[in-house]
Image (cartoon, rainbow, N blue to C red):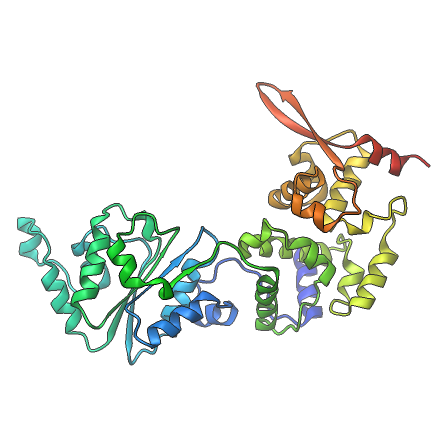
Amino acid sequence: MEVFQAKEKLLQSLGWAENPFVKDLRFSEKSAFMQFYCPFEANEILKRLAFDAKACLFLGPKGVGKTSATYFVAYNLPEAEFEPVIFKEPPQSLAELAQQSGIAAPSVLDRFFKTPFSRQKLVDALKSRNKKIVFFIDEAHLEKNKDMYMEFKYLLDDVPNLRLVISALSKDGFPDSLLHLVGDTNTFSRTHFSGAEMTRIIQHRISAVGGSGLKPFPQAYLNSMLTEQNLLSPRYVFDELNAFLAGLATGENVWKGAARHAGDPVVEAAVLASEQTTSHAAWWPQLSPSQQSIMTFLIAGNGATLQEIMDATSLSMNTAFNALYQLRGDDDAERKRKPGVPFPLVQAKPVKVGARKKNVYVAVTKVRNLFTTH
């Protein structure tokens, strides 16, 4: 199909071996993961393990990279010194921990007589290993058997060569004795990324496929795209970047001229100004591409639902919803960033469709008149 040919042509023109903005590389080959992943807290956890920290804790909401950090640390441990064991979900008992780790397992007689698995048996098995064992407990907040938190603590006390790396949404549910053993120095938290950190991730991905700098992404586009919502997770940003690339490949992207000169702020500004076709409002260039697309569509029509806007603009739900939220003037940070824009530019009018209510979005009257009255 033409779109796939356009994609290949774009990648070739950029000198990219492949699209760098794939969402999940953890389960691909190790070399691919190491090529694309840009570490932050993962490097700090590695430092702690290198200098014999007994345990580390990484806290944060879904999507901030806790699991990816787990894989990065595990992949980087020297094989001669460490033996990593990754638990994708927390084990519910000592027997399950022993069996899943492959370190030890209940005997046939134990299973037949339903004998509780001995902690001492696991301790002895762990001590007998010639390496430091690192248990990576991912999604530890999903632990149903809360007694296991204390079992982790007891194992760390009893096994000199055992290390523990835990990731969870928060500290809720962890006993104080385990948190005290981990310590504040070895506890890391992330709730979002800064614009500089996300730009570093983008640059890292581009360089991983043979590109350089931020090309083809104009800095003005990145500034408008790296909103508070998108900075919650690289996944949101990768969605936006892939949509940008798709528009660039098919010639539908309003930034296509500026993208050719990405990295040169003077040329970027000049090209962008020359491509602005709307001269009725001095503030129009301050709107992001997604905001401009939505406004252009709404000004020409009589209102549209979110789905209709998505269909007309080819924006993702997250991008369209976020842009509408800003256009309605509900985003205080956006209003501060763009004081010259007379928000709100859009109103939401609830209408009944069958038994349900839906919002129909319309350009406010003054804005509509500005662009339709000559």
